[in-house]
Image 1 (cartoon, rainbow, N blue to C red):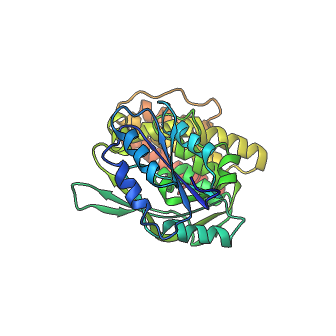
Image 2: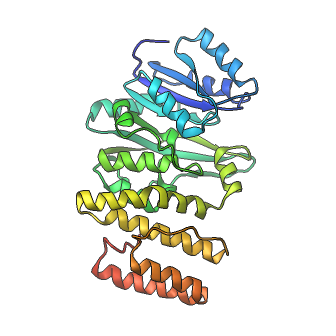
Image 3: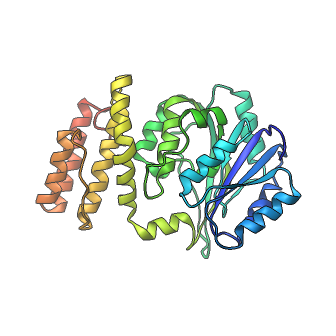
Length: 328
């Protein structure tokens, strides 16, 4: 393995023998050569490990790390622990970087040393169809975005979170925020990861496609969407991460915006679950009385009238307290 590479790329795998060689082939196409690739064996029982080992035997930039079967967040954190690069990037084994991703984002990071993370656009490719989507980047502006603007936007709009492979992070920053939260469930560890970085550090947005993200029947995103409703996943992330962090942020920074976004997200997802007749988990005692009342309205009254009440009253409240009752 090379000494002190500029960038460490971390790719966890389980039983992905059909993707390991392809992942390495795409890494070799990077215009920047100063990288190391850490394959994290997360408990593979097929031929994945032997393929990864054979690659590491012929390329000193490639290393295979053991990490039993503990899940994606611990696997990524194990890679972060082993990383030698100044910068670190994470990639799912069935996706790939644009050939100039590492070169362009590292050049940005070198130019703006105050930036904790740089990210670009994600091209979502739906295999078996003609569907290709460029992911929504929300309020992000080209260049440096000061904290906590992106964190607050992402706290409501999880679909705007950067795809993990679209980012490049200073390794010291990645470690300073504690890596990926391991107590999150349902694949939401990237919620806590991205928001925590965006709360603390400036973020650079590079408005070009830097990663190609594939959706197919066996992809992680497809698996999660088949197992649970999106609203349940989002609600879980709000309850476990954004709401507690919003309470702390309000106390520490005297800023209610993050808490308000998380409470709006909780309420919106609870309303969706009520409409679908799903069970509602216990809500945090600190949830604003207005949102509790809205949820009761949706439980006790016809959905159409309850939703009209919610929209009208929230718009009225937003006139006087826009940070507390956000409309976006």
